[in-house]
Image 1 (cartoon, rainbow, N blue to C red):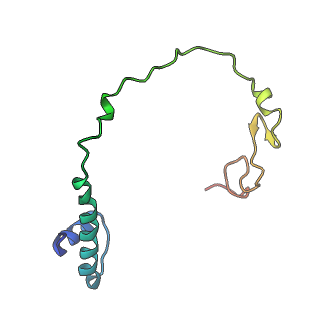
Image 2: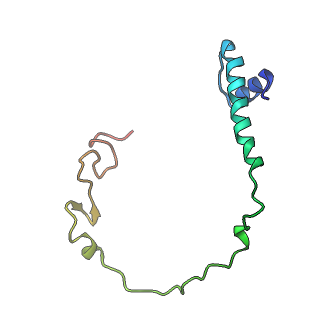
Image 3: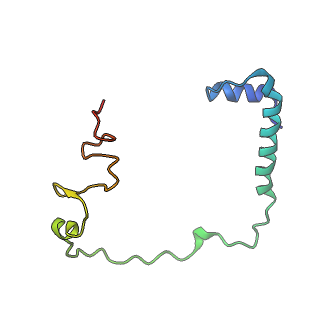
Amino acid sequence: MVSNSDLKRLARLAKLSILSENVDSLASDISDIVKVAQTIDDVDISRISNMGESEPQKMRDDVVMQSLSADAILKNAAHKRDGYFISSSGSMDVSGTADGGESE
């Protein structure tokens, strides 16, 4: 059970302000949440194998392959500028500021 003093201490550590009239209700609510979380301890996992003990994953060899050029990648782009894709939504310009406004 989360006591009112525990709740006030947690609120202070988290830099949260709680109204005095809400402390009892909030402490009760948090206690209920903790009770639900503690039900995890009641789950029988004895028949579940430890996934960390399974066979290691087989990894493929790291092979250098030919990649596409920037021109080939941008060939079908609807909007491009200076070798980059441009958003078609118009909500951001290439300067990185919303609607082309000045950045701060």
